[in-house]
Image (cartoon, rainbow, N blue to C red; front, side, top):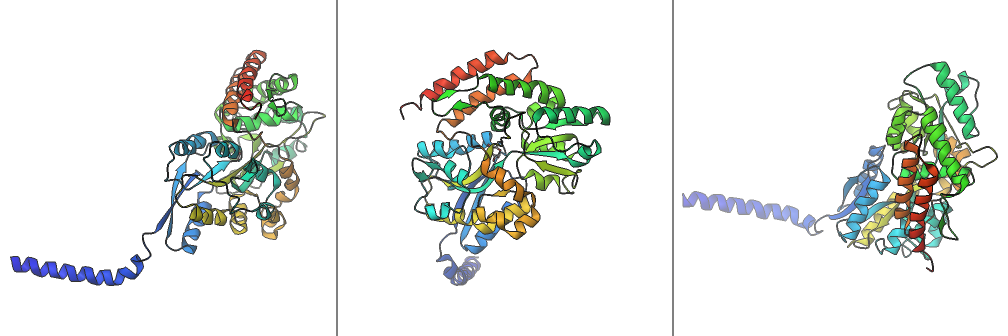
Length: 431
Ligand code: GLC
């Protein structure tokens, strides 16, 4: 028995040493470096999966471990900031919404990237997202793509009634009412946008409010502007004409995916969304209205200008990461021309790099970028302040209660929200 044991032990040992001989040269490289990347759930996940595989292939010995968080900017913010508050070393790189860099910089959560991302490189990007990534003279994120609000419409339905894309919001409402009345199709609604209580609600409401000459807050005087007549008038218009006039009530619970789903099912005449919706709406595998979709600038109010909210996502490095150089290598790859071109071609994302708007392949696939470029450069940022999130929370609550009931007391709600905002804005005074 002992002899058998000894024999098998010797066998096992020699097998181990043989394995060691074979494996050692590899093991001497050490364990693979793990880069932890926190991302949201994408609409075109395969594009990002492939990008990560390619990064790993080009950097042997590096493994990207991805944590996929919620799609919603508001919920994703909770996830990322919780990790940062805990100084979690297991997050190296994360996506940042265009409204976060000031907060992350002021809190000491995001690593300043100036040593990696010099001004000469920054100049290759559109100016607005770069400005959004700067805080007190330093840069904290590298833009991956930009977003700007656009109006999608059913080209077939507008043509059937002899309509051109509406130039003003009241015209959009008139067209929708006529189409709904004539089509007499119970499943069809006039408009689909993002009116749930979350960050997307701010983006939508800001387009109406600024388009009507109002504002969210006065950035010089640091006081709320929600109680201005022009701001309240826009909110009233959304409540009475858009939500309770031509939309399905479900729109009050929609974020981007649900509102787009309604449109691609052929159940909305008009749809407000970001540039990526073009790719989804024209993909016959994902859309019943592929080839019957038009896109235009958002309408304005009569005599006013069309306003598109600037959105978009950046990559940042956690101040608590133990491997900022590897993190930078990943960011460099993910924000480089090759990747931005790929996400423009296959995910319909609007590049943050200027040169790609002159790239023949990108323009062939997305000819609409040619005319949209101007609008992208004019898109209006949400004011970049470190207390953006508390201000947004107050505005979200206000907009949501103002539009959710037809008889809401907009004057009272706006007054209360303005007072709450002023208290937060006071924190910025004298800074
Ligand atoms: C998009 C935009 C982002 C915005 C969000 C709101 O993801 O890029 O800036 O905050 O939508 O839902």
